[in-house]
Image (cartoon, rainbow, N blue to C red; front, side, top):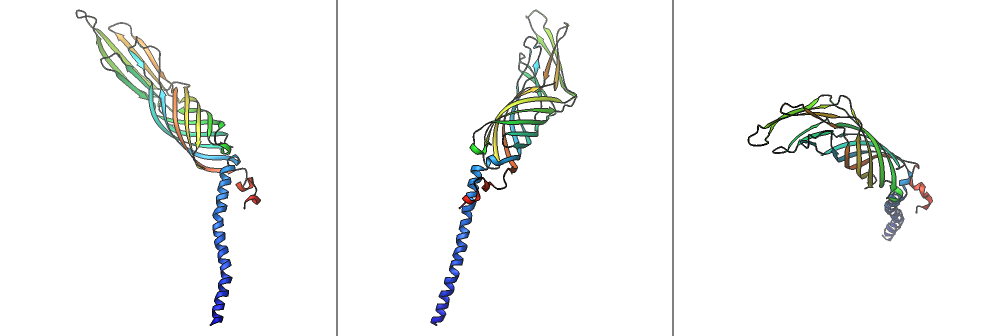
Length: 288
């Protein structure tokens, strides 16, 4: 009987060290993973060679057509504010240079307003709304230490907006102006015709952006951009007559010039580094 108990005790002493070694190794693994993540967070940024990402944009645009004759304040061109959305795919090189290409719903608009009537009258027209973009970016200041992704960027790009080449709208108004009780009122006629350009409109932009790194995969950007239309998108011809006098003419031309205020969320698809393993930055012998 004593021999049997002695065998049990010897067997337990032989199995226990191997079992404890397995437990020790099991709990040591998370510590090594933690060290890897810590080194990746601290030293991984400068090792990024290039990065592919997708972006979702939300923005507000402003636009105002250029008016050459207001008929002594009878008509005016109002500034239009419109919300829009778009998407892009981008490539970043060493977190210093970036190139983006994308699409947005960003129609160019024009508005004719008649403000001195008994109540304001507005006529608004717009292009078909498709806009294709190519943009280059340069980081000028980093605010995130070795990771480099958070900071200020300057950008420049070009937008191309197709046009329909068709008539977008027209209106005709008839009114009367009374000079006195005994006099015959003047008859006022206002006729307008708005046409879209037959060729695409090109719009150049310059902008500034502050980018915030939220995580290894997500960035959030806040941007302000100025746009200059290079050729007309919408042309509105207005003719104004009083009684039988010679007509006066005015023209509103909308090129898409204005401002853009946006928020962008970027998601990283792939990253390539200049070293195969971030542990090589500090050397594997240092890991304990």
